[in-house]
Image (cartoon, rainbow, N blue to C red):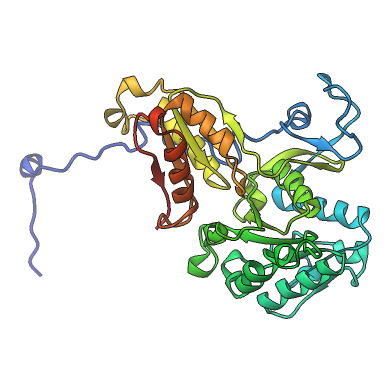
Amino acid sequence: MHTTRFSARSLSRISIPRRYNSTAVEPPPAGGHLPSVATSEILRTTRDSALRTPGLAFADEDGSGPSRPIVGGRETRKMNTYQAVRDAMSIALSRDDSAVVFGEDVAFGGVFRCTMGLAEEFGKERVFNTPLTEQGIAGFGIGLALMGHTAIAEIQFADYIFPAFDQLVNEAAKIRYRSGGQYNVGGLTIRTPTMSVGHGGLYHSQSPEGFFMGASGLKVVIPRSPIQAKGLLLGSIRDPNPVIFMEPKILYRSAVEQVPVDDYELPLGKAEVLIPGSDLTLLTWGTPVYHCEAALHMLSSPSPSLEPLIPASLRSAKVELIDLRSILPWDVETVTESVKRTGRLVIVHEAGMTAGVGAEISAEVQKRCFLKLNAPVKRVTGW
Protein backbone atom coordinates (compact mmCIF):
# COMPACT_ATOMS: atom_id res chain seq x y z
CA MET A 1 0.00 0.00 0.00
CA HIS A 2 1.30 3.42 -0.99
CA THR A 3 1.30 5.93 1.86
CA THR A 4 1.65 9.67 1.39
CA ARG A 5 3.36 11.57 4.16
CA PHE A 6 2.98 15.30 4.74
CA SER A 7 5.50 17.39 6.56
CA ALA A 8 4.44 20.12 8.98
CA ARG A 9 5.58 22.73 6.45
CA SER A 10 3.47 21.26 3.61
CA LEU A 11 0.43 21.03 5.85
CA SER A 12 0.71 24.73 6.64
CA ARG A 13 0.37 25.54 2.93
CA ILE A 14 -2.91 23.59 2.48
CA SER A 15 -5.95 25.88 2.36
CA ILE A 16 -8.56 24.61 4.80
CA PRO A 17 -12.08 26.11 4.49
CA ARG A 18 -13.00 28.27 7.43
CA ARG A 19 -15.83 26.99 9.60
CA TYR A 20 -18.35 29.58 10.69
CA ASN A 21 -20.10 29.39 14.01
CA SER A 22 -23.81 29.10 13.25
CA THR A 23 -24.69 29.90 16.85
CA ALA A 24 -23.16 33.37 16.83
CA VAL A 25 -26.63 34.81 16.16
CA GLU A 26 -29.36 33.69 18.51
CA PRO A 27 -31.83 31.51 16.58
CA PRO A 28 -35.47 32.55 16.54
CA PRO A 29 -37.87 30.84 18.95
CA ALA A 30 -39.62 27.70 17.76
CA GLY A 31 -42.80 29.58 16.99
CA GLY A 32 -41.04 32.50 15.35
CA HIS A 33 -41.19 36.13 16.38
CA LEU A 34 -44.60 36.75 14.81
CA PRO A 35 -47.80 36.28 16.81
CA SER A 36 -49.38 32.85 16.48
CA VAL A 37 -52.96 31.92 17.22
CA ALA A 38 -51.95 31.02 20.77
CA THR A 39 -50.32 34.41 21.39
CA SER A 40 -52.79 36.51 19.40
CA GLU A 41 -53.77 39.83 20.92
CA ILE A 42 -57.20 39.40 19.34
CA LEU A 43 -58.11 36.58 21.73
CA ARG A 44 -59.80 37.59 24.99
CA THR A 45 -57.84 35.74 27.64
CA THR A 46 -59.08 37.53 30.77
CA ARG A 47 -62.48 37.45 32.42
CA ASP A 48 -62.95 41.20 32.15
CA SER A 49 -62.15 41.37 28.43
CA ALA A 50 -64.32 38.31 27.70
CA LEU A 51 -67.35 39.81 29.40
CA ARG A 52 -66.86 43.04 27.45
CA THR A 53 -67.06 41.31 24.06
CA PRO A 54 -68.93 43.68 21.70
CA GLY A 55 -72.49 42.60 20.96
CA LEU A 56 -72.58 39.93 23.67
CA ALA A 57 -76.16 39.52 24.91
CA PHE A 58 -76.95 37.22 27.84
CA ALA A 59 -80.15 35.21 27.59
CA ASP A 60 -81.31 36.25 31.06
CA GLU A 61 -81.14 39.95 30.17
CA ASP A 62 -83.77 41.46 27.89
CA GLY A 63 -81.59 44.38 26.85
CA SER A 64 -84.09 47.00 27.98
CA GLY A 65 -81.93 48.18 30.87
CA PRO A 66 -78.97 50.56 30.61
CA SER A 67 -75.57 49.24 29.62
CA ARG A 68 -73.44 48.39 32.62
CA PRO A 69 -69.87 49.74 32.67
CA ILE A 70 -68.94 47.35 35.48
CA VAL A 71 -69.12 43.63 34.74
CA GLY A 72 -70.11 41.57 37.75
CA GLY A 73 -71.89 38.39 38.68
CA ARG A 74 -70.70 36.47 35.63
CA GLU A 75 -68.22 33.63 35.46
CA THR A 76 -65.90 32.60 32.66
CA ARG A 77 -63.98 29.41 32.01
CA LYS A 78 -60.93 28.72 29.91
CA MET A 79 -62.04 26.91 26.75
CA ASN A 80 -60.72 26.14 23.32
CA THR A 81 -63.01 26.36 20.32
CA TYR A 82 -64.30 22.79 20.30
CA GLN A 83 -65.12 23.02 24.00
CA ALA A 84 -67.02 26.27 23.38
CA VAL A 85 -68.97 24.62 20.54
CA ARG A 86 -69.79 21.70 22.83
CA ASP A 87 -70.88 24.12 25.57
CA ALA A 88 -73.22 25.90 23.16
CA MET A 89 -74.89 22.64 22.12
CA SER A 90 -75.23 21.55 25.74
CA ILE A 91 -77.02 24.81 26.56
CA ALA A 92 -79.27 24.48 23.51
CA LEU A 93 -80.23 20.92 24.45
CA SER A 94 -80.90 21.82 28.09
CA ARG A 95 -83.01 24.90 27.24
CA ASP A 96 -84.98 23.39 24.35
CA ASP A 97 -86.58 19.96 24.81
CA SER A 98 -87.22 19.72 21.06
CA ALA A 99 -83.54 20.09 20.18
CA VAL A 100 -81.62 17.10 18.81
CA VAL A 101 -78.02 16.68 17.66
CA PHE A 102 -77.16 14.15 14.96
CA GLY A 103 -74.53 13.30 12.38
CA GLU A 104 -71.77 10.84 11.61
CA ASP A 105 -70.11 9.61 14.84
CA VAL A 106 -71.55 12.41 17.00
CA ALA A 107 -72.74 9.95 19.65
CA PHE A 108 -69.08 8.97 20.16
CA GLY A 109 -68.00 12.60 20.48
CA GLY A 110 -67.28 13.28 16.82
CA VAL A 111 -63.90 13.30 15.08
CA PHE A 112 -63.07 16.66 16.69
CA ARG A 113 -64.72 15.83 20.07
CA CYS A 114 -67.28 18.65 19.74
CA THR A 115 -70.14 16.42 20.91
CA MET A 116 -68.18 14.54 23.57
CA GLY A 117 -70.41 13.43 26.44
CA LEU A 118 -73.62 14.90 25.04
CA ALA A 119 -75.20 11.49 24.36
CA GLU A 120 -74.51 10.45 27.96
CA GLU A 121 -75.85 13.76 29.28
CA PHE A 122 -79.03 14.02 27.20
CA GLY A 123 -79.67 10.49 26.02
CA LYS A 124 -79.21 8.65 22.74
CA GLU A 125 -82.69 9.68 21.58
CA ARG A 126 -81.50 13.30 21.36
CA VAL A 127 -77.83 12.83 20.38
CA PHE A 128 -77.39 10.05 17.85
CA ASN A 129 -75.37 8.78 14.91
CA THR A 130 -76.59 8.73 11.32
CA PRO A 131 -75.57 6.67 8.29
CA LEU A 132 -72.78 8.07 6.11
CA THR A 133 -75.05 10.12 3.89
CA GLU A 134 -74.76 13.89 3.85
CA GLN A 135 -77.83 14.26 1.66
CA GLY A 136 -79.75 12.13 4.14
CA ILE A 137 -78.49 14.13 7.13
CA ALA A 138 -79.62 17.41 5.58
CA GLY A 139 -82.94 15.97 4.42
CA PHE A 140 -83.63 14.46 7.83
CA GLY A 141 -82.82 17.79 9.48
CA ILE A 142 -85.20 19.61 7.13
CA GLY A 143 -87.97 17.17 8.03
CA LEU A 144 -87.35 17.59 11.76
CA ALA A 145 -87.35 21.38 11.47
CA LEU A 146 -90.59 21.30 9.44
CA MET A 147 -92.20 19.40 12.31
CA GLY A 148 -91.16 22.07 14.78
CA HIS A 149 -87.98 20.55 16.18
CA THR A 150 -84.63 22.27 16.62
CA ALA A 151 -82.32 20.22 14.40
CA ILE A 152 -78.56 20.58 14.96
CA ALA A 153 -76.90 18.49 12.26
CA GLU A 154 -73.21 17.86 11.71
CA ILE A 155 -71.55 17.34 8.33
CA GLN A 156 -68.27 15.76 9.38
CA PHE A 157 -66.16 17.89 7.00
CA ALA A 158 -67.26 20.85 4.91
CA ASP A 159 -65.62 19.13 1.93
CA TYR A 160 -68.46 16.57 2.03
CA ILE A 161 -71.32 19.06 2.14
CA PHE A 162 -71.74 18.90 -1.66
CA PRO A 163 -73.95 15.77 -1.67
CA ALA A 164 -76.30 17.80 0.59
CA PHE A 165 -76.20 20.84 -1.71
CA ASP A 166 -79.54 20.08 -3.35
CA GLN A 167 -81.30 19.64 -0.01
CA LEU A 168 -79.83 22.85 1.40
CA VAL A 169 -80.15 25.13 -1.64
CA ASN A 170 -83.33 23.78 -3.27
CA GLU A 171 -85.25 22.76 -0.15
CA ALA A 172 -84.06 24.40 3.09
CA ALA A 173 -83.45 27.80 1.53
CA LYS A 174 -86.74 27.92 -0.39
CA ILE A 175 -89.38 26.27 1.80
CA ARG A 176 -90.65 29.50 3.38
CA TYR A 177 -91.00 31.14 -0.05
CA ARG A 178 -92.51 28.18 -1.90
CA SER A 179 -95.11 27.65 0.85
CA GLY A 180 -96.12 31.29 1.01
CA GLY A 181 -94.84 31.55 4.57
CA GLN A 182 -96.89 28.60 5.85
CA TYR A 183 -93.83 26.45 6.54
CA ASN A 184 -90.17 27.06 7.33
CA VAL A 185 -87.06 25.24 8.52
CA GLY A 186 -85.73 28.00 10.73
CA GLY A 187 -84.96 25.36 13.35
CA LEU A 188 -82.24 23.82 11.17
CA THR A 189 -78.54 24.45 11.85
CA ILE A 190 -75.85 22.62 9.90
CA ARG A 191 -72.48 22.52 11.68
CA THR A 192 -69.39 21.60 9.70
CA PRO A 193 -65.58 21.89 10.15
CA THR A 194 -64.00 23.99 7.42
CA MET A 195 -60.75 25.50 6.11
CA SER A 196 -57.25 24.04 6.07
CA VAL A 197 -55.60 22.20 8.92
CA GLY A 198 -52.09 21.69 7.55
CA HIS A 199 -52.31 18.01 6.67
CA GLY A 200 -55.84 17.54 5.39
CA GLY A 201 -55.19 17.21 1.70
CA LEU A 202 -57.75 17.93 -0.99
CA TYR A 203 -60.73 16.32 0.78
CA HIS A 204 -60.28 17.84 4.24
CA SER A 205 -59.08 21.39 3.62
CA GLN A 206 -61.67 23.15 1.47
CA SER A 207 -63.55 26.37 2.21
CA PRO A 208 -66.90 26.02 0.40
CA GLU A 209 -68.70 29.04 1.87
CA GLY A 210 -68.71 30.83 -1.49
CA PHE A 211 -70.89 28.15 -3.10
CA PHE A 212 -73.83 29.25 -0.92
CA MET A 213 -73.64 32.98 -1.67
CA GLY A 214 -76.50 32.83 -4.16
CA ALA A 215 -78.80 30.74 -1.96
CA SER A 216 -81.29 33.30 -0.69
CA GLY A 217 -82.93 31.93 2.45
CA LEU A 218 -79.76 30.52 4.01
CA LYS A 219 -77.36 32.15 6.43
CA VAL A 220 -73.64 31.28 6.58
CA VAL A 221 -71.56 31.98 9.68
CA ILE A 222 -67.83 31.42 10.39
CA PRO A 223 -66.43 32.18 13.89
CA ARG A 224 -62.81 33.01 14.70
CA SER A 225 -62.50 32.05 18.40
CA PRO A 226 -64.15 30.25 21.34
CA ILE A 227 -66.22 33.25 22.53
CA GLN A 228 -67.38 33.87 18.98
CA ALA A 229 -68.11 30.18 18.37
CA LYS A 230 -70.36 29.80 21.39
CA GLY A 231 -72.26 33.05 20.94
CA LEU A 232 -72.67 32.77 17.18
CA LEU A 233 -73.66 29.08 17.36
CA LEU A 234 -76.39 29.78 19.93
CA GLY A 235 -77.50 32.71 17.79
CA SER A 236 -77.59 30.45 14.73
CA ILE A 237 -79.57 27.71 16.49
CA ARG A 238 -82.20 30.26 17.59
CA ASP A 239 -82.29 32.25 14.37
CA PRO A 240 -85.59 31.89 12.45
CA ASN A 241 -83.69 30.90 9.29
CA PRO A 242 -81.65 27.82 8.39
CA VAL A 243 -77.96 28.44 9.10
CA ILE A 244 -74.78 26.78 7.87
CA PHE A 245 -72.28 27.17 10.70
CA MET A 246 -68.71 26.56 9.52
CA GLU A 247 -66.06 25.99 12.21
CA PRO A 248 -62.37 26.50 11.22
CA LYS A 249 -60.94 23.16 12.23
CA ILE A 250 -57.38 24.33 12.93
CA LEU A 251 -58.81 26.66 15.61
CA TYR A 252 -60.57 23.87 17.51
CA ARG A 253 -57.58 23.50 19.83
CA SER A 254 -55.24 26.37 18.98
CA ALA A 255 -57.61 29.23 19.86
CA VAL A 256 -58.19 29.53 23.63
CA GLU A 257 -60.14 32.19 25.50
CA GLN A 258 -61.96 32.86 28.75
CA VAL A 259 -65.55 32.11 27.73
CA PRO A 260 -68.64 33.20 29.70
CA VAL A 261 -70.29 30.10 31.13
CA ASP A 262 -73.82 31.55 30.97
CA ASP A 263 -76.18 31.38 28.01
CA TYR A 264 -75.44 34.23 25.57
CA GLU A 265 -75.67 35.08 21.89
CA LEU A 266 -73.73 37.20 19.42
CA PRO A 267 -75.53 38.91 16.52
CA LEU A 268 -75.64 37.32 13.08
CA GLY A 269 -75.06 39.51 10.05
CA LYS A 270 -72.76 41.87 11.94
CA ALA A 271 -69.02 42.27 11.32
CA GLU A 272 -66.59 43.28 14.07
CA VAL A 273 -63.77 45.82 13.82
CA LEU A 274 -60.82 44.18 15.57
CA ILE A 275 -58.15 46.83 14.97
CA PRO A 276 -59.21 50.38 14.03
CA GLY A 277 -57.33 52.16 11.24
CA SER A 278 -57.53 54.94 8.71
CA ASP A 279 -55.25 54.02 5.79
CA LEU A 280 -56.57 50.66 4.56
CA THR A 281 -59.40 48.22 5.33
CA LEU A 282 -58.37 44.58 5.70
CA LEU A 283 -61.39 42.26 5.61
CA THR A 284 -61.30 38.55 6.42
CA TRP A 285 -62.93 35.76 8.45
CA GLY A 286 -62.07 32.49 10.18
CA THR A 287 -58.46 31.34 10.40
CA PRO A 288 -57.03 34.11 8.14
CA VAL A 289 -57.89 36.63 10.87
CA TYR A 290 -54.70 35.50 12.59
CA HIS A 291 -52.68 35.48 9.36
CA CYS A 292 -53.71 39.09 8.81
CA GLU A 293 -52.71 39.98 12.36
CA ALA A 294 -49.27 38.46 11.71
CA ALA A 295 -49.01 40.39 8.43
CA LEU A 296 -49.71 43.66 10.24
CA HIS A 297 -46.88 42.88 12.67
CA MET A 298 -44.57 42.18 9.74
CA LEU A 299 -45.54 45.50 8.19
CA SER A 300 -44.92 47.56 11.31
CA SER A 301 -41.86 45.62 12.55
CA PRO A 302 -40.26 43.79 9.62
CA SER A 303 -37.48 41.29 10.18
CA PRO A 304 -34.01 42.20 8.86
CA SER A 305 -34.59 40.11 5.73
CA LEU A 306 -37.81 41.98 4.96
CA GLU A 307 -36.62 45.48 5.79
CA PRO A 308 -35.36 46.20 2.24
CA LEU A 309 -38.77 45.25 0.85
CA ILE A 310 -40.91 47.42 3.14
CA PRO A 311 -40.33 51.18 2.82
CA ALA A 312 -40.11 52.98 6.14
CA SER A 313 -42.98 55.24 5.10
CA LEU A 314 -45.36 52.25 5.02
CA ARG A 315 -44.48 50.85 8.43
CA SER A 316 -46.60 53.39 10.24
CA ALA A 317 -49.70 52.67 8.13
CA LYS A 318 -52.88 52.35 10.17
CA VAL A 319 -54.72 49.30 8.86
CA GLU A 320 -58.29 48.56 9.97
CA LEU A 321 -58.80 44.82 10.49
CA ILE A 322 -62.40 43.58 10.24
CA ASP A 323 -63.73 40.08 10.95
CA LEU A 324 -66.77 39.58 8.71
CA ARG A 325 -68.12 36.66 10.82
CA SER A 326 -71.40 36.34 8.87
CA ILE A 327 -70.75 35.51 5.23
CA LEU A 328 -74.42 35.48 4.24
CA PRO A 329 -75.83 38.01 4.75
CA TRP A 330 -72.64 40.04 5.06
CA ASP A 331 -72.44 43.37 6.88
CA VAL A 332 -72.46 45.82 3.98
CA GLU A 333 -72.79 48.88 6.22
CA THR A 334 -69.76 48.22 8.43
CA VAL A 335 -67.52 47.34 5.48
CA THR A 336 -68.52 50.27 3.27
CA GLU A 337 -68.31 52.75 6.13
CA SER A 338 -64.75 51.63 6.76
CA VAL A 339 -63.76 51.72 3.08
CA LYS A 340 -65.17 55.22 2.65
CA ARG A 341 -62.84 56.35 5.45
CA THR A 342 -59.72 54.45 4.39
CA GLY A 343 -60.11 54.55 0.59
CA ARG A 344 -58.64 51.06 0.19
CA LEU A 345 -59.84 47.48 0.66
CA VAL A 346 -58.00 44.15 0.76
CA ILE A 347 -60.10 40.98 1.13
CA VAL A 348 -58.42 37.80 2.40
CA HIS A 349 -59.97 34.32 2.35
CA GLU A 350 -58.76 30.73 2.04
CA ALA A 351 -61.21 29.75 -0.69
CA GLY A 352 -60.43 30.21 -4.37
CA MET A 353 -60.55 33.62 -5.99
CA THR A 354 -62.87 32.96 -8.95
CA ALA A 355 -66.50 33.69 -8.01
CA GLY A 356 -65.55 33.58 -4.33
CA VAL A 357 -67.00 35.61 -1.47
CA GLY A 358 -64.36 38.26 -2.12
CA ALA A 359 -65.67 38.76 -5.65
CA GLU A 360 -69.19 39.55 -4.42
CA ILE A 361 -67.91 41.92 -1.72
CA SER A 362 -65.54 43.59 -4.17
CA ALA A 363 -68.31 44.26 -6.68
CA GLU A 364 -70.63 45.73 -4.06
CA VAL A 365 -67.93 47.89 -2.47
CA GLN A 366 -66.80 49.30 -5.81
CA LYS A 367 -70.42 50.19 -6.62
CA ARG A 368 -71.06 51.91 -3.29
CA CYS A 369 -67.63 53.45 -2.67
CA PHE A 370 -66.41 54.17 -6.19
CA LEU A 371 -65.72 57.89 -5.67
CA LYS A 372 -63.98 57.21 -2.34
CA LEU A 373 -61.60 54.50 -3.52
CA ASN A 374 -57.95 55.45 -3.96
CA ALA A 375 -57.08 52.06 -5.49
CA PRO A 376 -58.87 48.99 -6.89
CA VAL A 377 -60.07 46.41 -4.39
CA LYS A 378 -57.44 43.70 -3.89
CA ARG A 379 -58.14 40.04 -3.19
CA VAL A 380 -55.65 37.70 -1.49
CA THR A 381 -57.07 34.19 -1.73
CA GLY A 382 -56.40 30.50 -2.19
CA TRP A 383 -55.96 28.76 -5.53
